[in-house]
Figure 1 (tube, rainbow, N blue to C red):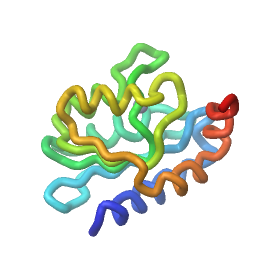
Figure 2: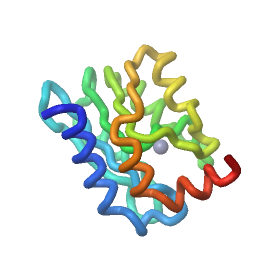
Figure 3: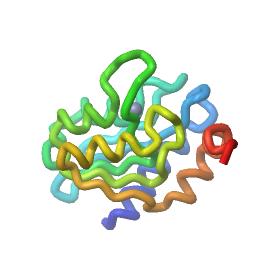
Length: 145
Ligand SMILES: [Zn+2]
């Protein structure tokens, strides 16, 4: 299994939630440890909890690689811990992201926070597929560009 294989699996999870997550994008998250999928989730119906916060609760993810179809959030309107902070707290080693999140609660800050904490981050893997999956969300937040 390659990075792209795991990301396709995350995209397939995200696809299951399209149209069910309100104004939030439907995000898929797959967590792999020693080459084995140990946890996976998608954004819950209505938009929360987010995919990453569900997935990290399902297994010991220390040292794992996280595949997520959208940049993890760096801030939450509810004041709850952001997904970037949760991933850091859980000790994941690497995060592979499909699409950058244009929403102001992420917008590069999720990636920055992960990197500042020593997590390896790669983004842009299957980005077009991820953007197409949440077309309305990307059109709304990229509309001014
Ligand atoms: Zn989040």
